[in-house]
Length: 297
Image 1 (cartoon, one colour):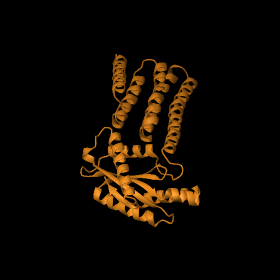
Image 2 (cartoon, rainbow, N blue to C red):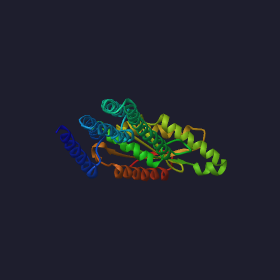
Image 3 (cartoon, helix red, strand yellow):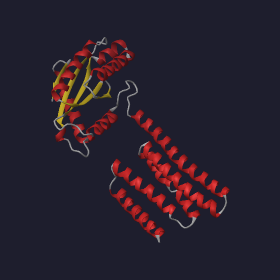
Image 4 (cartoon, rainbow, N blue to C red):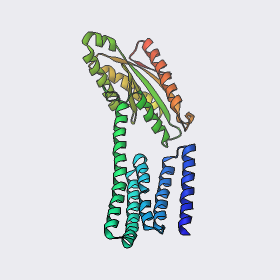
């Protein structure tokens, strides 16, 4: 009777989880709690099976939860999955050994351990490799800064965090004055050195915690969260520091600002794109006014 109860619980849980996953993607916390419950249900279902062979077979189901956890969650939850699988396998194989022989029990235990270790580890390795490739795809190869896609992704992740309600998101578009002349007179190698030097300066001397991106050509983006007035002061100093570099370039900078309270909580991509567009327009105003200055949209 107990077995039927657990079968019903497990089936209902699996159906509810599938329906939830098909209608909306869970948060990280919801996913972790669901996996924890699923791991424990698999273990309980295996333990109450009247047949030791079926109990051993049930232990292999934790490779599915282990693979999911390895892809989406932390090592801590993966260790929990493995420990539950190991304890369940010991209980199931002990029964199997009593019903058959020790050789069969040890062989079954070895297969369960191998599956529950190798499958999650293989998926974790593949996930790390994919993460490395994804990180490389978000980086500008010349300067080592973020590219436009990586820049937007970083901002979206930061906006998801709890930030003070009174803070602003400030985006600055930095365009180098005289860069074409530098390339024409001293060659592309000199231009590349100037781009790398400016990128390094933006990272080291920019607003604290800012995201820095090479938007393309001789254009850079800097974004920071905090007091708009403070960040604007930092940007003005950046403009001055760029002019002090030994590469014979200055910068025209456009700034746009939005209060965090005005940004949506679900997807801020359109608002980020709009801030970049506004900063770009302000940058062209600064360039038309002679360059080597900052203009706020």
